[in-house]
Amino acid sequence: MKRIKNIFLTLILAVASVSCVSKLAYTEPEVQLPEKFQYTATADTASVANLEWKEFFNDPILRDLIEKGIKNNYDLQIALKQVASSQEKLKQAKYLQYPDVGFGVNAQISRPSKNSMNGQSLNLFLGQSHVEDYNAAFNLSWEADIWGKIKNQQEVSRMQYLQTYEATKAIQTQVVAAIAQGYYNLLMLDKQLSIAKANLELSNNTLSITQKMWDSGDTTSLGVQQATAQKQSTELLISQLEQNIAIQENALSILVGENPNKVNRTIEMSDTSLPQNISAGLPAAMVSRRPDVRQQELVLLESNAMVGIAQANMYPSLKITATGGVNSFKFDNWFQIPASLFGSVLGGITQPIFQKRQLKTDLEVAKIQREKNVLAFRQSVLNAVGEVSDALVSNESLKVQEQKATEQVQTLKEGIKSAQLLYKGGMANYLEVITAQANSLQAELNLASVKRQRLSSIVDLYRALGGGWK
Image (cartoon, rainbow, N blue to C red; front, side, top):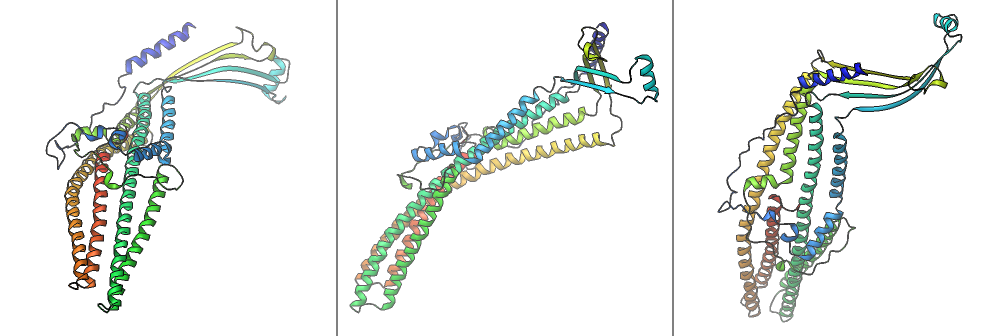
């Protein structure tokens, strides 16, 4: 026992004397960030992305859809399972610094040839033609973490777990935004269908007037045909819009994890509202809030730990193995204590010398991968800033477009009234009336589309700033 104690003491001193590296130092890569986002007047520290999605969206139906999506969306559920899987691996990684311990029991009977030296020796010394061996022992194996290889392996597992966590948040932001976009698109289609039906009634009135004028000989059959074609075109549009509404309802249902079905809605697009005085905050805060950027930084941290592992593999490794238990050549005295007890301890330092350059290659490849991940991180930051800038300029531009489109609709509606009065008075032909109706219909449809784009741009900005996962 004293010798074993001395061996352990010597090995511990050896570990302490050579231990110098635990984890490779990490320096966050420099990224070029603007002081404020483009198309913003001032650099405001507050950001709309700090709002929880329940605060950002005030429509109760939309909130209910988003809540269902977060609970039932299959992409999110798969991501959560990946988080659970990584969590189990992280738990296992915490035990990497502990020794491996096993227990084995075996029995062996050997019967050598009587004409062999072993056979004759057995018969001479033991008076039997066979030999028995019974063994029950604990086996222990432990590698000292001299160069931080195990700590870096634990770091890799931790970074992989955090990546899955950030990936889940990123998927949630996408799901929240997709549900909101789909819902607003559905409201736009409802509005366009309402416009088309109102225009159909207008077309029916025009056709009725044209028919009466043809009956009285004040117009030609071509006028009736043109008015009929205008009505048929509107009926075709209504059918297409109803089809698109059903498809959008199905898409929304699937997005929230339900079978395709109708989506109940009680408000029109004109009744919807989102925060208007939107503050983007600072780019630096956005980078720390965006899950996809955080995930890419965690990939970089993982690759840094992989460099540490590859580097540690090139240094000596200290391994200790120990075996202890009971052993006997006879079954009936197998467990006689202490006569059957045995034990052994072995400690050794192994230095790789020639591995066909494999270790050097692994280290260089790990360094190159880290450099690639630095570039990928910088690209993710650049993309994030670009997405926010795009959403900001779209929102500002769509404000102007919505105002102009509203003015255009009002002008063209007045034009319809004028054309109808002139047509009834014989001062305008049927073509002018039909053209005025077609232009007004297209303008109203376009206004509904612009309003939907405006809502979508606000949702895009919220997502681009890192909102939606809280």
